[in-house]
Each structure stands twice: as C-alpha cells, then as structure tokens.
Image (cartoon, rainbow, N blue to C red; front, side):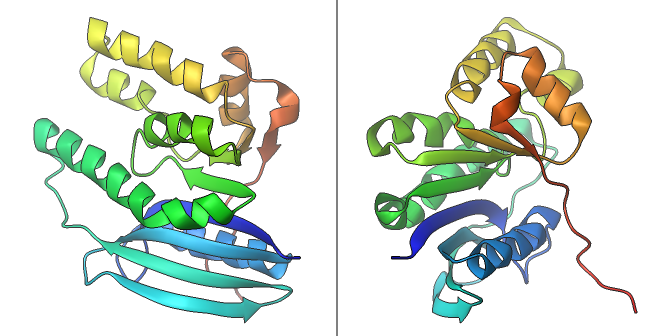
Length: 199
C-alpha cells in the first residue's frame, strides 16, 4: 500500500517564489521514492486541482489555492494576509492530511507552525518541518524584541519541540535548533538542489 504525504508551501509555479519551485522538486523526489504526494500551495490565478500523476514508484497531485498578493511594506495587512493564507492552505489540505501518514510544511507562509502543530494534536500525523526562514526570529531582527514578540518566540519554541522531524538547508540552521533543545536525531541536513542542470 502506498504511503501518503501532504506537502504544504506558499506560491507554486508559475507564480514566482523559490520556496514553491523547490517544493515542486521535493514533492517529485518523494513521489519517485514511492510516496503518494499531495502538494498544496497558493496561486494568484484561479484555484485548481491537478489529479494525481504517476512519478517513479509513487504519484503527485497538485492543489493550487487562489490568494491575492499583498504589500510587503504594510505590516498589519501582511499579518492579516499571512493568517488567512495559513488557514486557507490548511483548509485545502485537510482531507488529504486526514488520509496521510506524514505532513511536510515549509516556513512559508510565515507562522504556519502555529496553525499546523495545534491541528496535528488532533490528527496525529508525522510532522516534518522543512525550515526555510526562522520566524519570529527574523521579525525580531527587523522590528526589535518587544513583549509580544518575545511571547511569540517562546510559543514558537514550544511548538517546534513537538515537531517529529526537521529538514534544514545548512548546519547553521541545525545549530539553531539544537540550541533550543531539539534532539540531533530529529534533524536532517537536506540542502535545496539546483533547479537547473548544466551539461
């Protein structure tokens, strides 16, 4: 019986976004290794669903959910956009998550951890966090460390410790995780592959 994985990220091609481009490559790799993968991400176009296609020993289904873009310089609207985007993505992924053995999510959209980890208390799936950026650490570096952000950081540490496995891009990310008490055996070094090949 094929094992099932749900892979959640932000913007999928043809929308621009490095995270989504690497997610497509990663989802194909999981499928090649025998997993039935459902990749869920955002699109600026119309929502659509591409039915599962065989890849290697597994298959890949792609679900794109419409979401408008946002203005990065307006913090309040960006925060609202992020909250709604996380809820919309999880809503689109929920039925697939219910059937899956594992759920892999990226750090994009930001703060997805705070939505998916509490939901996983009910679903009890193997949760894999592919770290792209550290939130709220980068937000603290940008805006300073106020009481609210310090509280968010402590809550982030709480949820990170409940993730089953981490994929990190570099050893610096692995060190940051071990510094907050994540066991080394939960961390796997997996850099992004080159999106192009050279002959």
